[in-house]
Amino acid sequence: MDLAAIKQFAEQEHQRLKGYYQFEQPQQMSLAITVKIAEELGELCQEVLAHSDLQRKEKLEQMDKTNPAEEFADVILTTFILAQNLGIDVEAGLKNKMKKIEARYHHQ
Image 1 (tube, helix red, strand yellow):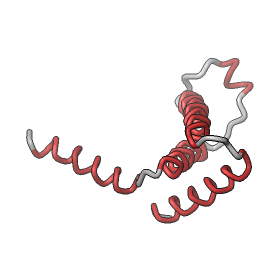
Image 2 (cartoon, helix red, strand yellow):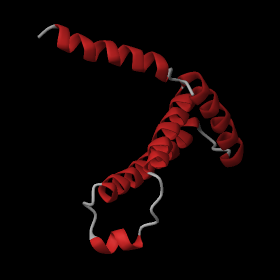
Image 3 (cartoon, rainbow, N blue to C red):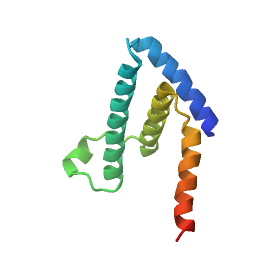
């Protein structure tokens, strides 16, 4: 799988969500997706704690041991859907950020 496939899926899911929720203003959808990212990130954090045996014993016993990879995927896909809603090219942003990070190490 490559970024193009992720972007295509995010675009399709964005259109489905727009049709389903029918927000009156685009900002409402952006806010809803941003909150969803926070929810997904919280679930990822719980998985990381459980995977590292740092979660409380009571919580570990109650947890549905889902695949941590799926929680990573939820965060990534939801982020791509938000970018789609905002008209942001994540691929260009990633390339630019990677260049900036690389430049930090070349100036040392």
